[in-house]
Image: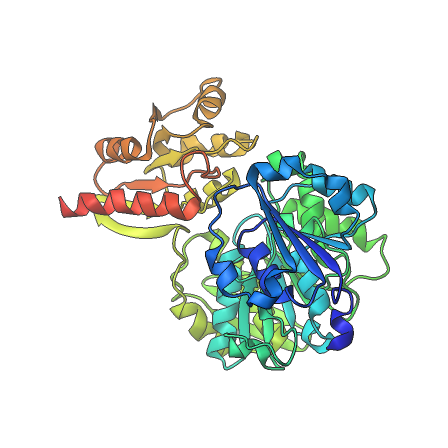
Length: 487
């Protein structure tokens, strides 16, 4: 392991962003690096827990600079002493200290890249990485359940909440609370975001999965093409020994695969899945069965007992099943795990039949395509609560289907006016209400939704204009709805 840590041992590290990822990096490398300089723009961060877990003798090598103090820094002086910069996912490349690092030829990596280089060669061979605009967390959790229930030693990590670096054994003296992370046969199932992919260079999962690519994070990536290209970076370092599971129903992925297949020599083996049976498809769906032909394996898997609703979730199950089959899981184990996997909170989560109305919490819908997917399983029976943080998203595709799916539209958040203007510029057959708060929206929703119809929060936008995150938004919605049950 010593040669794996040489690139950070006794070096001067800068960590930008002190969320979960940045703090994990510090905890794992403090004492190993000569020094760590940590920056965060939030002056009110509570770092007491961080200091509790760092031995006093190592605190001298750690310098933390918060809030307004950052703007007062002599950045050139600091950069002159730094060997490597690690950025948290939320840190944009436009940040002055990041630009200065790049101008001075200092490597700037994501935590994903750092953790990857700390893994041993055999550990790297037991990795699955999943990206996509929608469905990532459902898929990594489902893969984790299939593998775990079948007896495999696995951990779900990455963008899902547990940073990849927290699964890495740095040295024999390190006592990892997650003992399974120290086992040699551990399979890492890594959720990967576009933000993490911005700064990868050698990251090379053995199995990569690209679920879908639709418009999102335009405020950060500027154009859809930039965003899509970042997602496709997931298998840029893979070769013929690796596998890439791809959704051929996604037009953008299909286009890109066709382009690179004719231009690149070093490519992974593509495992293709889609809703319709086609000649070159490895996994497809028909009548509650997933049919597969992967190498010498051929058969079908029943998903009739799955609790996951909607065609987008059938697609998610196909991707998960393909991974499990590649790892060697039998179809009976896959069927059993799929039938007992419960939908995740805030992802088309059924809250119950309340005051004559079926209520769904889809707060994780943070882009218009996620809302389209949520509406796909319903007829024209929905009161939809839509809106939130304005990320310069294109709502035109969503607006086109609303006449077929909804009776009432309730707009909230800073994007409400822009969406309203776009809708009212054309023909629409539903009533529109604009509400200042989620409480007001829920109150209006119960008032206008008819018996046996659907009240759904599927905002199609980020939450940070009104809430801490999508979980906070979803929990607030659930609380407001369930209060109605008790009245």
